[in-house]
Image 1 (cartoon, rainbow, N blue to C red):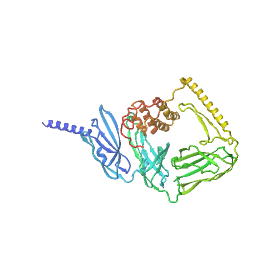
Image 2: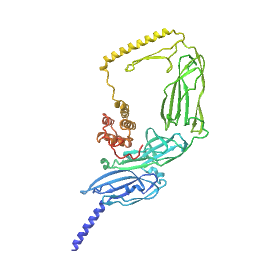
Image 3: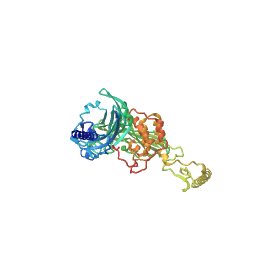
Image 4: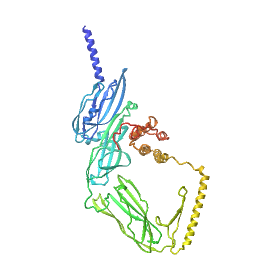
Length: 562
């Protein structure tokens, strides 16, 4: 009888041990974090399939940024042991003594865990000991409405990354533009070498006050090349969050001159095209070009350019040419305007001084860009005046129902010309136009079969982006290849915001695998075969059927919208 009780006790002990072995175990990668940082909750379960945990209790004190799953399998002395680790990235909503609540998985639950959230990161002073560091800085610390602030984001990582997603900063009441391409280099911090990805953003406040720049975040998976499990997709989730930044934005100063508000780091205004000898003739146009360049302002903020009304000349403006470029971390806006100046009488043509007031944010004072006044000596015309846009008397005869190229003829009336001679000239020109149209129509009917069909609109529109992708692969520039591939995809799916969304929008197969290889080479020491990438997208994109409003298959929204 005693042996029976002992056997029953041993059976109950084994059953209890098995239950303890398979019960989910929760742990935090850190017990103390700074406000705004990310902490990872790891939940380990045994061989039993318990299903997915209920994460809703976390919503009280935490923001769930994402989840990842790692599976491990080991055989020791013929005994098979399988474990699944679910990683949950959490960002505390506030500072203080928080508790990660117990989570239910099947008919079991994890244990609650304490977490201390400090006002500032206790690990910031020893950033060199962290494998992933995200640093964001804004320059300058204060400025004016409409002024560009440079936000520099640097990702430091001393581990091998299998994948990763780097978010963008956000700020309510400000325009944010990403500038240029990412810079990749290495840096030494605290005696430790880091790979660095540097990115610049232009932040332009629209309202005065304190501008709060919400920090971006990075999420990825680190792999150990010496770990055999890394070949089976096992890895360690890693993440980092930059510290929030604040900028004091001032309103337009009362001492600023009236007119357009132009807070720039530098500004130049020029006018070119004057005759070298300072002379011109009546009726002969002079083409002048005015150009405005402003560092620290996009071209959309620049005013329209114009010449003042000229006594003794007609002015005909051309279409403006605008654009923005980057000069280091700063935007340089450009606006160019051409003018056809046609003298109407002899004498001196005076072009008055042109001024433009702007605010120098470097010296914090008002300045004026000036184009000096110029005089041009105008002599008599050469008899037959040159044609002037928009005001010359022109006769253009062409059938309104055809696409034949019209033959346009400009006739300049001279004083004293007999009206009968004018009528005869107009009639002759009309007959010449009709004859040219008939000849063109016959040739068009005869060669209509040889006219090649136009390119499809979609192919014409996507051609440049496809070519940029191919050129970036030929140069081995993975950063530009990534941007070009995403730009190409946006021609068909404008809602795509990153390569993760693009991969999810494609059918499983070669193309998502190629994107994965590109990301591995982009963020770690992996390699990407340009020939494989080019071949994968040779025939365009293999899209999934559109289910969601953004055309990405209706999946979960991205963690960090751009």
